Each structure stands twice: as C-alpha cells, then as structure tokens.
Amino acid sequence: MLIGFLLITVGLMSGCTENNQHADDVDTDGDGYIDSLDAFPSDPTEWADSDGDGVGDNADAFPSDPSEWQDSDGDGVGDNADAFPSDPTEWQDSDGDGVGDTADYFPNDPTRWEPPSDDPFVTYAEPYIQMLVHDDSELYSYAYGLFSDFDATVRECRVNVLYRDILMNYTCLPDPLGSAPLQTPQETIQRKQGTCEDLSILLGSLCINIGIPSYLVFTDDHVYCMAYDVNTETLWDCAEQTLIRLVESEEYFNESMYQHLEGTYYLSPAGNALYAGGEANKTFDGLIDYMTIDYSFQSDLPLHLFVVPTQTAFYELNEGDYSNVIYSEHNITSKTGTVPQMTTFGGIVLLYPGNQTATITLDFEFTFQPSFYHTYNKDTLTSYDIEGKDCVICDPTLGDFGFPGYDAQITGEKTAINPLTKKYITLPN
Image (cartoon, rainbow, N blue to C red; front, side):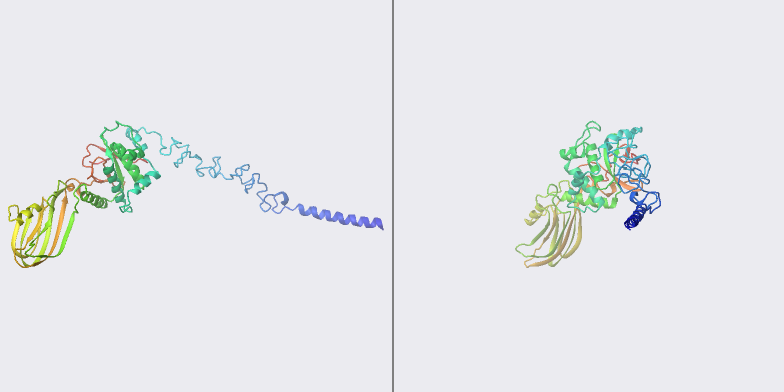
C-alpha cells in the first residue's frame, strides 16, 4: 500500500509540472517568440527593443540609440537630431539662419549664406548689406521707444518717426562715399553721428526690426535707405503734421499754424480799440511765407476797421499815426472778409470812436503758410514701384525739414537692392 501511494503522488506531481511548463510556452502573436521573452507580445512584427526606447528593433532605424528611431529623409541622421528631417541633403544649421550647413556658404554667420556673387554691383553692395542688422532686441526697443507720442499702428507713421529721429538727432558727416569704415547701427546710435552710409544702415536696420522691409539705394556718391510698401497719401499726412509741429516748436516759430479767436467783446470810450494779431517783437523770421486772416464781426454801433502790418503800427494808430495802415474801412457795423497773404505778423484793429459802449461779436481765423512748402510738399514726394508696392527713399542728409520720399537732390542713376534676395533694379529718374 505504501508503494502504491508514492506512485500515485509522483504521478500527480508530474502531471502538474507538465501543465505549468505549457503555460510558459504561450506565443500570443505567433511570431515564434514566447510571450515571456517577447518585448511586444501582441505585435507579430516585433519582439526586441535593444535600446529600450519603446520602438521595436525591426521598425527602429537606430536600434542601439534610445534617442532616435526614425530617419524620414534617409540621410543617416535621426529626425530628433536632424534640423531638416525632410531634406536628405541637410541635417545641421550651425548658425541658425534657416539654411543648412551643406548649402550655407557661411555656415557660422547667421546674416549670410549665399556664395559671393560674381555680379559687380552685388559685390560692391555686399559690405553695406552685411552691416544691416536683423532680429535685434536692442534695435527693436530703440525703435518702439520713439513711438510713445505717435500712433505706432500706422506703418507710415512709424517710417516717418524713425526718419525724423535720424534727421533731428544725428549729425551726417560729409565724408566721401567709401572713405570711412562702416559703423554698426549700435555704434551709430552711441556716437549720434555717421556718414550717409552709416545713417542709412541704421535707419534700414530699425525699419527691418519693426517689420518694414527696407532696400539700400546707391548712386555714384550717396547711399540711401528705402522703405518698402508704404501708402504715400498717409505718409505725407504724417510728414506734414510733423513738419508743422516742428515750426510750432519753441526753437522755431512757437505759434500754432491755425489760430481761432471768437467771442463777444465790449468797447467803451475809455478803452475803445481791439487788436488781434502778432506781438510787437514777433516776426516770421523766414519760417512763414505769409499769414491769411479770415474775419467776420457784428457790432451794435459803428466801428472803424484797420489792417496793420505789426503790433507797433497798432500802437502808432492809437496815437493818431495812420501812416502804416495797410487797409481801412469806416463806420461799419458788420463785415466778413479775408486779408490775404500778409508777409508780416500784423493783425486787425477794430476802433470804436463813439462815447457809448459797443458790443461786438467776432470770429477771426489766422492761418500761417510755413516756408517748408516751397521745397517739401506733397508734390515733391516721390515713390517708386517695386514689385507692385510703393517705396520711398529716405535721405538722411536733408536736415530738420526733410521728409521721407523727398529725393529731388539725388542726381545720376539710382540702384535699389533687396538685402535679402540681392535682386536690384535701376530706379527711374
């Protein structure tokens, strides 16, 4: 009985051992690798992942590199490390300019990539083009710091403000073209001076950094910046208002170009004259060509109307000296008219000769014509069509009253070059 029991026990144990071994031999996906040894037990195409990156060795282009598993363009560089994963000829961009090192003639210079041109003009312009600065936070901040008092949403206003900053705050050195080393925009800002080349490079860089494409324009003896894609009507409106404000500034004429006087006034026998006009020591001083006075008044009692060339002439009139009176009309109770183009800062006198109190309602409008319109006006704003866009030259040598688009002083052939494509055109005279 004891032997039989042992045999039965061994038999039962042997049966259990055989059943357990069968479970370990399961191959769920039927790829010939049992599940316990298969890294992908449900995928019949994969069973091993040598680098542990979660991609099977059969599909992994880099089975021994856990950082790579795919090479879309087949250039031998994994997509994660490949700067150009869809271009089999490129994989690295050392200077970050968007052009692969294979095609980049200057792989360590982010400002250029094309091989030197055999075109003589491009070769000539290249040193200037290379001085233009793109994507610079310092220049961006400098430009936007100038817009605080202006509408920076208007493209033409931004061009005008940047150009005005160059004219008003930088000295243009009269060095012959190419006679001095070119300055970087940052150097020009620091020195507040430079040649026409330096100032044009600064202006072009500022425009580029706020999203306004710029060309460089060359003549035989000058370099200019050209702002691309501007509306000339809007540009002139911006420029005109700037020039008017300049004339009105304390260092110039210090008077509003449009002055309006209206109201009700009382003239009594004790103080029986009203004068509206310039002060005795105030002159146009070459800044104003003329002044026009539009006037209208009504009085309940007759008045004498005089137009005088200066306030001094008014004082003389008050003393009985009428020798400097320009125009007069007597014993009137109402009058509407215009005093056209007075070349001195005089005015209008209303004189009451009676012995009662006269009540006068008046409306006077003084309008000044600045002298800059002789040279700088809408008719002299020149634009050039480049690729269907209006473009204007910004000459940094024009002085305080210049404006973008005025290039009447340019002589000879003008050649504009796109600093990115190196394409250039000759501008019409």
